[in-house]
Length: 348
Image (cartoon, rainbow, N blue to C red; front, side, top):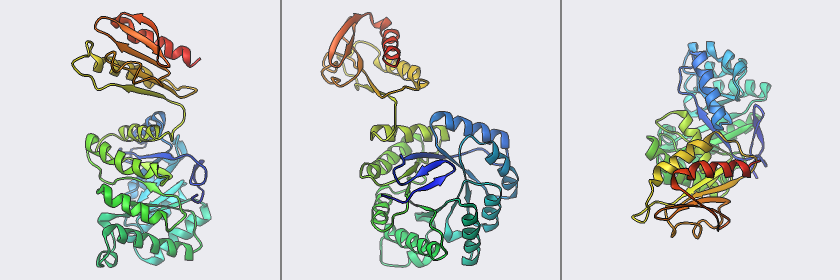
């Protein structure tokens, strides 16, 4: 079990569930748009938000963002230790730094001391693309170099009486990322922040993140995650939630399963499933239920026998089933509305 830390009121490590993080894509200096995006992220299921602090204009807006945010706010800092110090002073719930590019050890000590005084955690983020030269110029693999870098930084923090840490080791290479996290997981008891950095566009990034993050979580490695996409942060949170749902690591939700369709399918199953998906999106269930939509008798209740409620089609009719048993026959054009009625009844 990993050490327990808190970002605001969100627990990470210990017995806490895996939390979802994202990062605002708005200009931090635009307080209104940044707060609006944070509100949207919270509505999607985000637990913690990170904002970039690249310059003084971002610092000037940061205090109001922290005060009005509906989520705990982490300040993302690179290169300038003074920006980190000011963010801590203005109420950041956490700091993300890459110690390799933040400046001298004295500057790093100053950040550590101030974060200790405020009792806020620091994430040590080591990225494959920005490893210090002394770690790159060895015969070890890049994953091993990332781990060595992280362990040296961890020791420096510990030597300065700072234990309020979480660690990330990110690469755009899925296997390299997984190797690095597996190595580090055996060597330290600090909570791990998982992610595939620069994962790419929505489609490619989702696939890479699902493989990398999902594989590690399946082996009980990782305590908080961020899916990095060249897309809206809203999409990042949606993908992160689906990864956690697929692994049974997120709470109550409606799981929607559906068949891939084939020539036996006589209805436009794709549009039907999309319609149901939209209708259940805003529902906040009080329990987990599984809903199945199948295109034919072959992929009907037989292959969705464990579904709480389901819908399957023959050439002319739709059939509602529950627990693998047929309940009623219905016209295809009425099938979605009837299915939704039954879903709502189950959630009462």
